[in-house]
Image 1 (cartoon, rainbow, N blue to C red):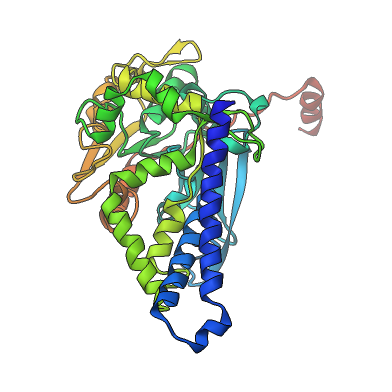
Image 2 (tube, rainbow, N blue to C red):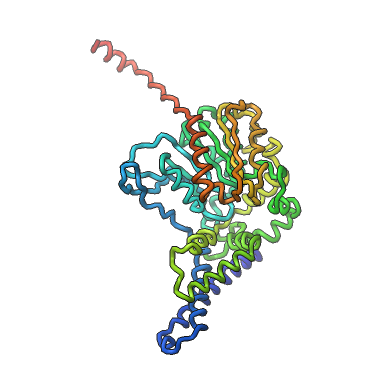
Length: 432
């Protein structure tokens, strides 16, 4: 009950700040005050506008916002986001461009489950839509999943990826961004052992902690320093009464957001201060640079407690994947079993979350894979977000990834023709 009360208290504080912002904006915009111009009222309106929007966005899942796409024919085609596989904790979505012929590459983008929604990869998806059939994992907010749905830890996450890869078939190219890189590698190895015909054509791992100890960062230092008991005591809460997942143990999105913000507090404080000044002068807009970034950045989701704790304990502390000792559903996964899936790693030279060296460790784990099917790239001057979004991704990394896919494409095996029944065989004989 104690953990549930703290969850509701945090939500109450968020709600109160949203209300204060709305109240300040309404009060400063009172028509009678316009007869007596006052800079303080303009500043109050700006503060209220920014504050209300900021705290409101924390509980809203952003829309994909990809409504149409301009194809080679110069026309805008509608984009429909359709679920291919629907599960309790996450769906497999397809971005279907209406009226466009099927593209030569089928790409599965594995989105991270690290506090933000899959929509964080909106620009990545848009860039791949140019000449790919794009699919993505869309993880659900744990607060909206009833306790009756059961647990969800890193083993369940891995098995979800296995099912999604099986659904799409062997002609799929998988791109894992950040957190899911080690688990996607494990899912591929699991398929290599259990269902080789379902393995993807290629696997691209972008900025993920395959071996967190390869290059220590503030994130890995924290994972080493804190004990699991401390994490469970300070980070885990129970979902409050307002949501469907009432009673479920989670690592709350609002708590995660406070950690994100604290890492660069000076920069965020300055950004909001500047936005308040712009809003007070009437220079802010719904789609300015600040709102475009923070509408996505502030939208956070709860993670199941078992997923968060098992990630810290098994990926960062015990380094099960880095040591090739990862177990899924009672089966010890051997990364060396990957012999036919081309693997490429992408890292940013200035990445302070998954520093260079952590992701490329995947290539050393793939002992059964020939060097001709291994590749790596370190993007100069790029930070963590730059390697999957922004100019570094668009201009340099994306073309390399597309070339890697093309060089390692394979078509799915043709389905075997069903054997003719005795009746069909006799009918054929009569016709001949």
